[in-house]
Each structure stands twice: as structure tokens, then as C-alpha cells.
Length: 458
Image 1 (cartoon, rainbow, N blue to C red):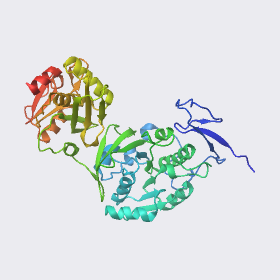
Image 2: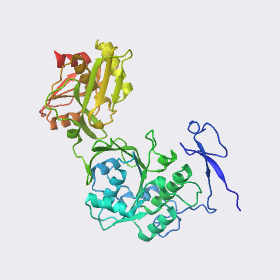
Image 3: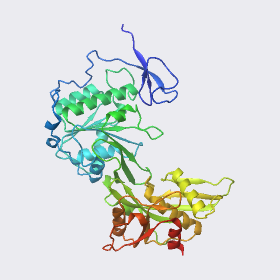
Image 4: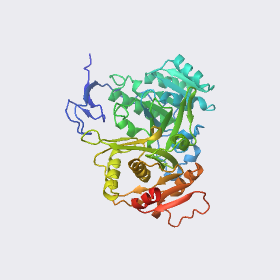
């Protein structure tokens, strides 16, 4: 009987060690090493053989000038939100990882894409649901496709046998944590299994030119479960976010080798599936019948997409000794910085005040161009005076109280004009040499917070 070979793996980064250690030398985390049984085939080829009949690429060096990627154009999914996030469509041979909380809609999104691509042969592999359960979901979406095939399996050897027989043009794996390979004798979802299965799928995608989508679980901290090396192996990492109690979902890009990493896609969850939101500014601005104090509209930018978003604030006397500083959807450290600027440069007494800040719509923003809107909302709540519903803001606030310019101010102003705003307050340095004579919106340039205060409240 052969001796069982074991090793210790870090559950965070996947670092291997022959013995247990308390602190990982690679990522620095403590108590993350777990013992796993390992076993590799002697030839080391894994499940996907290089000599398979599906392989299209030759293992020989080629001159860079002779390579023409235009022969294999991107696959357009007819989903404008996903195409924008991916950089214009699905790249042949790419490996894409989609992570998100349970029940957020990852499987729904991938099954919807598989059904929409009517002229593309798609294989949807599910290790979590049976074929009848997937059929029930597809019937609820009311999509019909003759080229969508469903396979309920978790063994990679069986999956690759079906792939070689079917020869799909797109492969979806739901999820990577449920797959297991016979070459690794550890439980499904372990570091070694996830790494081995991802490596086999990556080899299949690169050799055949077939795009592969992997659905991944996340940890309680919000990171994708499994070794960190998995995110390095794939070409694109997408994060599907949103509150399960709200109807809107946000698709973000944290890594993309074939496009920008700051693009954003917004979906609305309905009973028949996910619907792309073409104009997110309209859903991010709440419909109020009366003006309220502490509310300001800011023009932000997500990738190449301008959006108007509502900033809500509330300032009230502190009930207890230590005042609270609470922020939802906005960086708490940046809020503390803006409060310090308002107290130092603006003369506001906020030392004994509770401050609450909320970004409407469940969005999470990090654009410094919203600083001016945040300050306007805080001043409005402090003065107990409502701002005009016809004005919005776009500008960064410095530590000296100066209003700094933000990038692509023309797109922000055009978005505000399209939504019917009459005025927009921006930095004076952002409008130098720019003509706004043809616009129906009034541009108010300011240089300091004092000028903003005078324009709004005097």
C-alpha cells in the first residue's frame, strides 16, 4: 500500500509547507495552514490532455508581428452592461471569475447570458443545482435557446469528456468551489482542489480558444474564497454586489487584462431575471415631493460612465459623550477628513455632533469628485436649510478648503443637463478654456468652501 502523501496549505494564499507553521511566510496571516492529502499523476498532464482533438494552438514559438488577434474577434453577449464591464465583449480563450454573496444573482446572470447567446453553443456546468432546477429557473426567465446545454457534474474528468464530445463555444462553471479532480485527494473547495481545477480549466481555455466563466464563492470578509493565486491565474475578476433586499445589483471589475478596471454595470433584479439599467442616474435620485435639508446631488464618474447620485447627511447633537461618525456607501476616513476641513476652514462646530452620511441607492462610491456634494449636504444639515433641487456639485475638496478640479468635467456637466438640472457648481480650475455657451445649464465656478457657502446660503 502506497504511503499517503500530505502537505500543509495556507487557506488564504495557497502557500505550501511540508509542516504546520503558525504564520504564513507568504501572506503573513496566522493559523491559516491546513493539512491536505495530495497525489499527482506521474505524467503531470492533468485532466485536460495537450493532445486532445479540441486543441487549436501549436506549441511552437511565433513572431509577434505574425500574430493577428483580429482573426478571433470578441463575442458580443447582447448585454450592454456585461459587454461594457468586459471591455467590449468576451475575449476568446479568456478565463473570467465572478464572485458575490449568496443569493445576489451570479447564477441567474450566467444562465441568462447562456440563453441570450442563441447562435453560440454554450455548456452550463452546475455542481450546486440539478438539471431540473436549472430548467425551472430558465422557464421563469422566459428565454428560449436551442444551443444551451446543461450538465450537472462536479468531477473534472467527466466534465472534460462531455466537453470533448459537445465542443461548446462557451463554458460556464457554477461554481469552482464544487469541482474536484481525481489527481488531488482532498475535499472539494480546498486550496489544492480549487487551484488544480482552475489550472485545468485555464489550460483548456488557452489551448482551445474557448472562453470560460467561473462562478466563485466569497468569504465573510467579502473576498473570493480559495487561494489568492486563483485571482492571478484568471484574466478577469468581476464582483457582483448589492443588497439582497434591494432590487438593484452592481457588477464591478477588479481585474481585466483586456479592458479598463473601473467600469460599472447596473442591473435590476426582477422575477423574470436581470435587466440592464441604461440610465442609472434616474434610479439613484430618489423622487421627493418636497425638498429636505441635508441632501445634495453629486456628479460622479465610474470608469467612462458619468452618474448623478444623491448624498444624504444628518447632523444632530451627540446624546453620549463620544460623538458618532457613521458612513454608508462612502469612505469613513474621507468623511472624517471633510469634517475636519469644515470645522477648521469653515468654522462649523462639529466636535459634539453626531454625523451620519448615506449614499442613496445602495451604491458604494470612492470618487473624490463627490467631496463638494458631501460638504454641501453636511452644511445643509448643519444650517437646517434645504438646498435647491435644481443644483448639483462636482469637485474635490483639499485640506486647505480649496475646491480642486476633477477629470472629465464635460461629461459630468452633460449628464446633469440631461437630467434637467439648472445649475452645477464646479471648481474654477476645471472650466479654464472650456466653453459652455451652448449648454442650458448654468456652471458656477468656485475656488473655496467659503464661496460655496456664500452662493448657497447668502
